Amino acid sequence: MAFYRITYHEQYRFATLHNWGCTFRCPYCSYKLRSGAQGRPGFAEPKPERFLGVDELKKVLLDLHPEKVYFMGGEPTVAVELDEMIRFAKLELGAWTQLGHTNGSRLDIPLLDGANIGFKAWNSVLHEKITGRPKDLIYNNFRNAFERGMKLSANLVFIPELVGYDELEGLAGFLGGLDRRIPFHISGYIPIPGQPWRRPDDAEMEQAVALAGKYLDNVRFSHLSSSEALDLRARDDRFQVRIVAGV
Ligand code: SF4
Image (cartoon, rainbow, N blue to C red; front, side, top):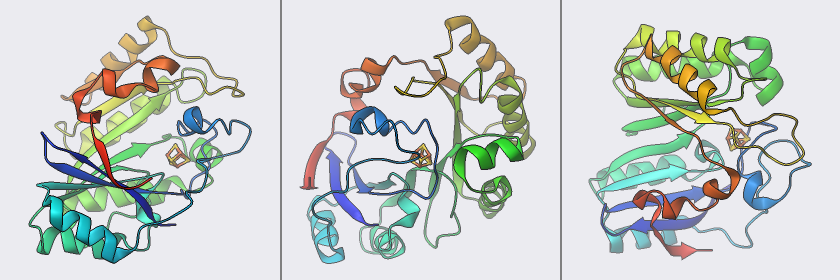
C-alpha cells in the first residue's frame, strides 16, 4: 500500500498525499460510493495503475512548498513511505503535518502534528464486528496521542440502527473525559447500496448533536445525501483542489 496521488489547494496552501488501502473492513465504507464495489467488505477502491515513489513525492512537495501536508486514505498509516514523508514535510519544508483522516490504528508517529480520527463504535463487540479490529487499540492510541500533546479531532458516522445514540454517547463521554474542547464531527450515514441501514432523519441528527453536546463543546455535523457526498467541491471550498501528481 502506497501513495498514488498528490492534490494541492492554491489558496489554503495545503498538499494532500492519498494512500490506497485500509486495514479495516467497515461494511459501510464511504469509498464504495464512488467505486461501485458495494458487495465487497471494507475499503474497495480499485487499485491505481501506478504508485508514486518517494523521490517523486518529495520533488512535487519541494516545488509546491505547502504550509501544511495532509495524509489521507483509505487509511494513510498503512503507507510504507508515511514516516519518511512526514519527516521530510516537517524538517525540509517546515510544514504542519497531519493525518487528514485515519482510523486511529497508528498514531505514535514521530513529527506528526495532528490527526483526525474516524471512530466506528463504542461497544467492543460492535467495534470488532464492524472493523475486524479491537476497540482498545484505537481508543488507547487516541488517549496516548492526546497525552503527548498531539492536536486531535474525532468523528463518527451516525447510523441510527447500527451506530446509534448509545455508541455516540459512549464515544462523546470518552472524548469529553479527556478534554471537552476536542472537536467532534457527526456524519449522518450516507446509504451505501446493498447495505440495510437507512439515513438518519433531521430530528435524529438534531438529537445526536444535542447528546454529544452534553460532553463536548465543539460539535459539528454533516447530513449529506449520496449525490451531495459525491460533489463536495460544490459545497465546501476546501475540496477545490487540483491533482498535481499521480492519477
Ligand atoms: S476505516 Fe475508513 S477507509 Fe477503512 S474501511 Fe473503514 S470507512 Fe473505509
